[in-house]
Every structure is written in structure tokens, then in C-alpha cells.
Amino acid sequence: MTEKTNGTKKRRIEPKYVVLLACWSVWFVNFLVRMSVPVMLPSIQLEFDITYLELGLMMSALTFGYAVSQIPSGLIADRTKKKYVIVPGMVLFSIAMFAGALSNTSMVLILMLLTAGLGLGTYYPAATSLIAAWFDRGERGRAFGIHETASSVGSVAGPLLGGYLVFAFGWREGFTVLLLPGLLAIPIIWYLGKEPEIDLSGLKKEKIVLNPILLPTAVYTLLIMGWMAFTTFLPSYLTDVGYSDFQAGIMFGLMPLVSVASMPLAGHYSDKFGRKKVIITLLTISSPLALLVTFIQHWVPLVLMFILIGMTMFAAYPVVIALISDKIPASNRAGTFGFVNAIGMLFASTTPTGVGHLIDIASYRIAFLTISIMVLAAAITMLRVKKPDES
Image (cartoon, rainbow, N blue to C red):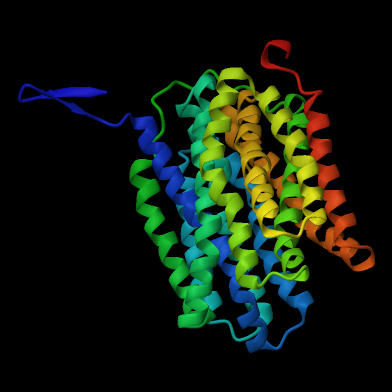
């Protein structure tokens, strides 16, 4: 878009890209916080003298709260402006982080992390609905791909920030610092997260129809289950075979780093060639890679393997989200996205426990074979998903 000023043309950013940037910023904050907290857990464990079970409950509380708030926040977002849902959530998150920093027992901290998760969970269904409203079907793959790079950047920056805060100040001060990005995100989404000027009055009578999204939801859930299990235990596997924590962290960080480029690229190709072809291709390639990691110990092929996983497994996520957005009416997008993400996150929150048990009773190879099967099952399920013109 351009406008003339004193005989010259002045370029203006299209409103939809301003909204996308605003959403990207808040999604980055979301992941920055969620990926900073795990690095602080050892320091928390030392102060409260708690078991690994209680430590696990802290992350489960954050994830569970995040999952539980998806459906109600999505339903509310379908009936009001999206910022009216996202902003209160960020306020709740900020209050919970401040209260968490003052916690005098581990149970109080668990409760505060649960509350923080409830606040963070209001973002995703509202934001994905907002992005889908601004971008038509032929642009959504690329738009969601760009949006999801925020999760990749946050996944890289979060552990670095969390580690620095614990080292320099302590976990309590770290929690206090982490509420600041949430506060900064509030004016960004309030002033820049505008709704498109379209008439949805004729759409408000539509009912939520789950049948068209059941198979895509299954694909999404299987992918998230495999992703969460793989990313949870990959660092411990690398240290188990002889790499230092620092080396394991560097190699792990390659995957989200590569996905900063691969996510929008995969989204673009899905706009051009279709969601189904791209998703099946990415999942089919990434499935054996998760298992092959356990057959390789030299750092050079491992690095190449992690780059490929960042280009495939990580890149498939925004394309699946774009696929789901194609299959739901505009009036119910937020509620439907909330349903899908809640189902995926609830199942995914149980996966690390099951896969961890497999490592205890069998081996890393058996556990990673299970992860590989999850991703392959997602690809097979995708074969049964109909294209838009087949629906």
C-alpha cells in the first residue's frame, strides 16, 4: 500500500502484517517464558528440597493450566474482540509470576504456575482466529509459518534467558523479570491487534461442526505428542551418550533455529501445492529421523540429523494449523482452535511420563522408536484427511 506525500510515494505496511507482527510478539513472549522456567527448576528444587515428582508437577501445572484455558477463552473470543481475551490473560500471567516469586512453599509455587498457564493459554485460540480472519486461504500457510517462528525464537532465547537470570540473580528475581515481557505485550496487542472490517453477522448462526476437524485434530495431537516427547528427552539422551550439558543445549537449539526459516517456507509451499502433500511429506521424512538419532553418536551426522528434523518435524506444525483453519467457519474459529489445542496439549502433557517410563524399563532406542511411530501415525492419519475440494 502506498500514499503520495509531496510528490513522492510513501509505503505503508498493510494492516494484516501489522496484526501478524503484534501476534508474533505475544507468541514470542509466551514461548520465552515457557522455555525459561525449566532452566530454573534445579535452583527451585535446591531451595525447597523437593522430589523430582514435585518438580515435574510444576511443569505439568503450567502445561495443564495452559491447556485448560484454551476452550473457554476460544469460545469467548468468538463473541468479542480478540484483544479482550488476550490482554486479561497476560495480566493474569504477570500477577501469577510476581506471586510465584514470593512463594514460600512448593505447593504455592505450583498453584501460581497453574495460574500463569491459565493466563498464557488465552492467547492461542484468539490469535490464530485473528490471523485466519486477516489472511485468506491462499495466504494462511505462509502467515501461520511466520507466526510460528516466534515459538522457535522463543525456544532458543528462553533457556538462554532463564539460565542467565538464575546464574546472575536467582530464580525468584528471574520470575520477576519474566513478568516484564508479559506487561510489554499488553499494549502491543491492545493497540495493534485490530479486527478486520468484515461482516460476520450472517455467520454467527453457524454451529460448531467437529466432524471436518476430527482427523486433522488427530494429526495435530499425534504430532504434538511426538514433538513434546522428543524435545523432552533429547537433551538427556545426548548427555547419556557423553555430550556435556552445554554441547547438548547447542545441538538441541539447532532444531528451533532452523525452523525459523523452514516454518514459513513450508507454509508457503502448502499454499502453493496443498496442505495434505506438504504435511505427509514432512512427517514421513521426520518419522525415521527420530529413531536414527539413537544409532549415531558422532557430532557431525547428529548435527545434520537435527537440522533435518528442524526442517521437517518442526516445520509441519504451522501447516497443520493452516489446514485446520481452512476447515472451520469464521464465526467459530477461536472456539475450534481452543478445542484442538486443548486436546493436543492434554494428551501431550502425558506423553513425557509414558516415554520416560519406557526409558526406565527398556532403553532410549525403544522410547525413540515409540516417538517415531507417533509421527508416522500422524502421517498415515493425514492420508485420510480430505482436500478442500473433496469435503
